[in-house]
Image 1 (cartoon, rainbow, N blue to C red):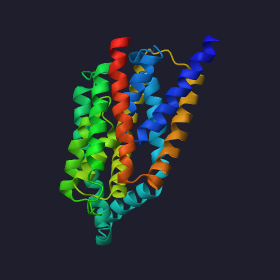
Image 2: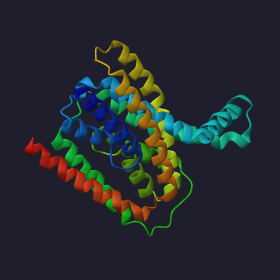
Image 3: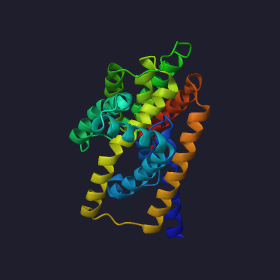
Length: 270
């Protein structure tokens, strides 16, 4: 019975990771909430979190495979063959690099100093909800379709705050992009491509640390959680791309506000 309960916990965490990594509601915040509810120590789940994050990364890589292939081949043609028609592809990759460098540096410097308790996650979720509500109020704005160098830098600076559990990476990136009046679909593409870019070194570092970690690994639970993380990330990004509009962001805003209040209440209850 105990073994079944443990597997169910991993299944739930895999689904939570898959859905919340894509939707602007903070995967790190929700994993903190659920691990606390399950009486699990996040410090003993380093490998597990790396595995489930890799599932989300692979799902996004699969969904954006044509975009990634086009940007890689275009950059190669511009750098090696000097094809001017491919210059914009290369410049787009540079803009992605500009957007991920700040969050990458912040993550390396602060990863061991970030709070991940009920209270801090609760307030961070309230911030995420407030930002999404602010963007919802801009729903009648005339949106632009091109991402400039300045836009990339602004999005990157906004994305830096996503290292704090409870601050949604996709939510804060959407906020940065829409505050620059970039059309939502363009922001989503830029946001998730930057996530793919930064996930490559993060995943490699995670696997290196996994071999150095003495964490007890539940092979079946971790495997199932990885698969569910992949499947639900893929389903979520397809749903987000097809149905979510700026006016719908108020739904996620309200949800984050409720989740934040719940987390703060649980801080005083537990």
